[in-house]
Amino acid sequence: MKTVAIIAQKGGSGKSTIAVHLAAYAKSRKVRPALIDLDPQASTFDWNEGRTETDPVSPKLFCLRARENDLPKAIQQAKATGAQLLIIDTAPHSNRDAATAAKLADFVLIPCRPARFDLKALISTAEIARLSSTASAVVINQAPPVGGKAERAREVIQGQGINVLPPVLHRRTAFEDALTGCRAVHEYDPESKAAQEIAALFDCLRRGLKLTG
Ligand SMILES: Nc1ncnc2c1ncn2[C@@H]1O[C@H](COP(=O)(O)OP(=O)(O)O)[C@@H](O)[C@H]1O
Ligand SMILES: [Mg+2]
Image 1 (cartoon, protein in one colour):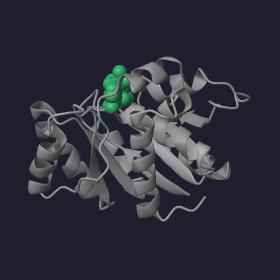
Image 2: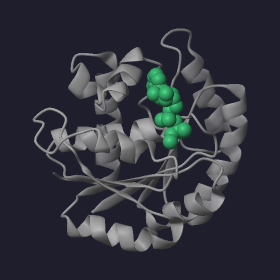
Image 3: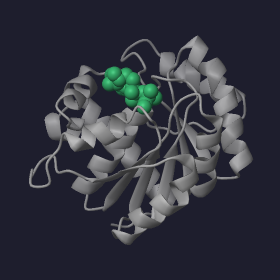
């Protein structure tokens, strides 16, 4: 089982959105997923609770709520289900949770919006990832679909010595619309640009993690 921790000190950067999408998309690609939600707000857990086991398009996934001190146990429970890809969603403003998740993961994914305050907050998140000694990279999320902002942000972030993954997630209403119905974009509108972007992000992580499904 490979584990990806999604961390960002900034709220609203897209941690939960990306967590549920990676897990749901993995399932559609026959890579067995599991989710752990460390955020007391439980967006990821609640999204999954809105799904049903028998739904052929949007099946309920294995998802646990956990606290930082029982994370190792939750990871073992996920592993016992036969999961091949575990995604850990974390709370913003919680250095301790993020640090523990980062240490226990195989890869740390840091969503960041290409906006001034987010780029500033990224420095402290990147430091948590660095201290964990786990490989990490930023994924630029909610980039405006036009105007080149994502590429400018990429240069700024890389200039700080922080890795940035090639795939970019743009601001797309399909994300909001899909999440409202406890779905993922590839389930809601498989032809959408949002679905293509999630596929590209998943493939990038899959290659990096050497995940076979
Ligand atoms: N690429 C995107 N396009 C449009 N809306 C997005 C995108 N990513 C996230 N959102 C929306 O932004 C809000 C915050 O995202 P969320 O995943 O809850 O962030 P976090 O978990 O980091 O606090 C949510 O309403 C979500 O639907
Ligand atoms: Mg969240």
